[in-house]
Image (tube, rainbow, N blue to C red; front, side, top):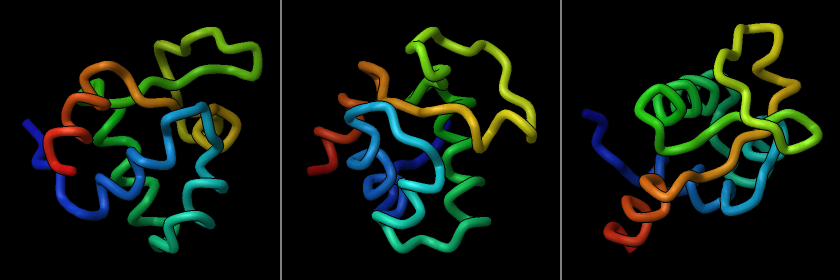
Length: 85
């Protein structure tokens, strides 16, 4: 399981609506490498989901797709975010 810390909460708060990683990085001020790692962990543990430009969920996201995919919070992510706020 993953512990939701301050950096994870910052990222989750940006993902109420589908956003690109570049938007999350600019809004949170978290370094790019750290933000990518956090997003991958949140996605792995299903706190967020990846969607394409049309809103269709992506089940697999490789390194090339990581910057093209949009990420949004799942119900599990929303619950974890609300518990910490």
